[in-house]
Image 1: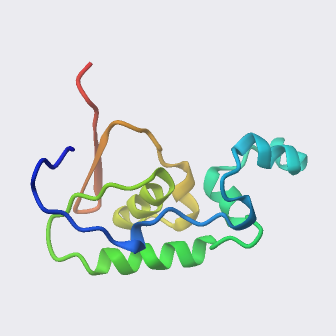
Image 2: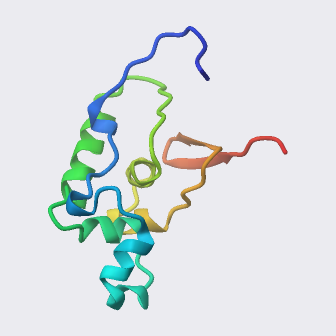
Length: 124
């Protein structure tokens, strides 16, 4: 465990976006059901916004903002990629529409400080 024996908290506001009827499907499976989208190459956030019975970006964004407003100091957040994109866009003051174009890499740390993002990559 990365934190060793240090205490940590979980927060349901950091759950990944709910995809409704598409929950558990792969991108390729969703695109096969909606071939008209394949040509437009939508971002993952655009796909989840359209998810039948899903949470939607407005509600997703609202709970992320609520979580961020509850922070009272430096915080380490471990979460999935789409949540990370929306959280990072919010922290940087970017419009929600730009969140899907942010990088969504695994195995790195995104340091957010004073509206500036720095990506820390693991040593090779």
